Length: 264
Image (cartoon, rainbow, N blue to C red; front, top):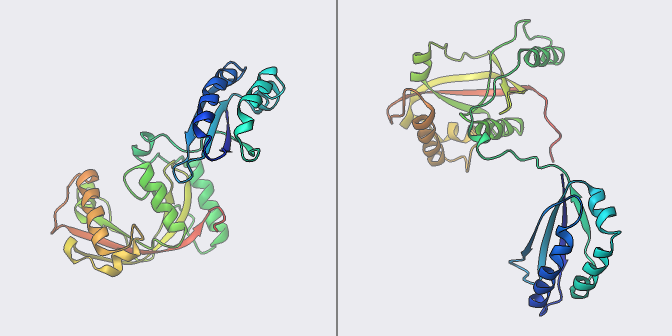
């Protein structure tokens, strides 16, 4: 499916007439082969401007089927007299956004083959890396978290993270150590980056300082924002819960290798 998108510049003062004409013309559109749906929206800042979007099965359904039909001649006769200038028509492909519910799911599991291939590429670019691949994980508790936080890492904004010491103890996991490396995956479980721990310290939640909060790169990078976000995160996603006197493992890291698209 494709989407036709066109901004319609209507002559000021003729908006009501245009809207009536569009309602009369819409059935001409709706009966075309390959038509799926359409929507007309009036501008907020510029009230004489309208946005028309039409979903078609293919571009040819619009460019050939509709535009070469007699219905299109009637469409033009009804609507074109209202335009200041003839609008530019553009077509767009599939929707690249994920549905809201899917982004609330946990990050996807990584495939062993993908991790092995990524580690091979890491070692080619950083020959000093060991043969055995390190642990792979995603930042955050949902696919949305994982995607957003990874982008901050790739942009060089996020150089720190914080974990609950209680969670490490409950799960029997070792604490991070200076010098160790980890593979970071995105929300789909695709390995995208390799980071190396540069500093680790454990303090109470209320003792986390502004410098560390800024290193995590989220929101306005303030300590207030860090406290609000992390209290909510541990309350929602941590099995051991949240407390203001909980011990927090504050980790700093450096980006060693990444496979990211070019950035502006």
